[in-house]
Amino acid sequence: MNKKGLIFDIQKFSIHDGPGIRTTIFFKGCSLRCAWCHNPESICPQQQLSYNPKKCQLCGTCVKYVNSKGINIKNNQLNIDFSIHNNSFQLVNICPFKAYEILGKEYTSNEIIDIILKDKEYYDNSNGGVTFSGGEALNQIDFICELGHKLKALNINICLDISGYDTNNFIDKTFDFVDIYLLDFKIFNSKLQKKYINKNFKIDDLLNKFEKNKKKVILRCPIIPNINNTTEHFQKIEEYIIKYSCIKDINLLPYHNLRKNKKFLSFIKIQDFNLFTEEEKTNLKKLEKYLVTLIK
Image (cartoon, rainbow, N blue to C red; front, side, top):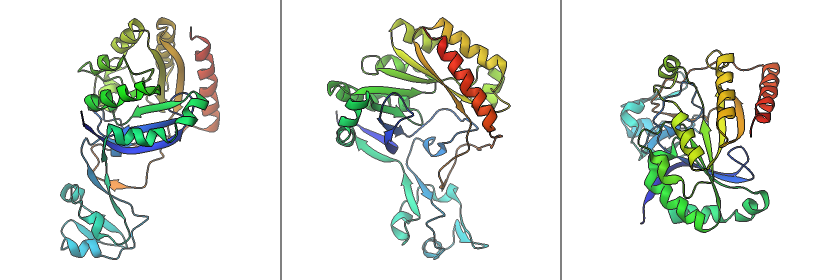
C-alpha cells in the first residue's frame, strides 16, 4: 500500500512501554493538550523546526541568513520566533553546528520493520515486542494498521499506547493485530478534564470494547500532584480494576518534569507541578501493589 507514517522518535531497548524488551515507535500528532505533557514535540501532526541551545555556538549564521527577521542574538542567547520559522527547514543545513533539526520523519512500514527486525532476538528472549506510542498513534490509523498487520505476520507482539480519546472509533480497526493496550487514565472529573487536557471523555466505552473482544489492557495512570492525586481518583481506578477483567496490570506513574532540551513552536502552555517526595513515591508504589492484588 506504500503508506507513510510521521514518526518523531524510535526508542530501542525500551522496558517501560509494555512487557519485555521493546522498540517504541513514537507517532507525531495528538488530540489532547495535557498541561503536564512530557512529549510536547509530539503534539503537532506535521513536521516542524526545532532548535537545541546546547549545540548552538551563537555564530550568527542563521541570523544573517534570515536578515534578523524572527531570529536574533540578545544577552548572549539566540531568540527564535517559531511562529515565523516553524517550517524554515533550510536552517537545518545552514547551521554549521547542527543546532537545528526537523521534528518528525516519514517512514514507510517496510523501513520501520527493517529497524524493528534488527532486535527481534531481544523480543523473543524477553517476551517483548513493539509498542506504538505518541502523540497518539490512532491519529495515523491507516498506517498503523498496515504496519501492525505486517508485524503480526512476523509473529511480533504489539502494544498500542492510547490516551482513551477515540471519537472516531479507530480502535475497532486494531483488534486483529494489537496484543496489549496501554490505556491512559488521566482524569475523570469533567471540569478538570477540560481545564488540564482540553477534552471531555470517558474511558468506559473503550474498556467495554476491550472486555467484549477479550483484549489485554494495562491501565496507566499519570498521577499529578494537586490534580488527580486524590482518594476519589484512586477509588475510580479500583472500581475499573474490579469491574473489568480485561485489565491485567496497573501502573501508577508519578509526575516528572523531564523534557528534551529543544525549542520549537509549542501548541500548549506547559505547566510545572510540584514533584513528589521520595516518601510520596514510596506510598504510590505501595498503593500500586495493592491495586495489582485486585486484578482478576
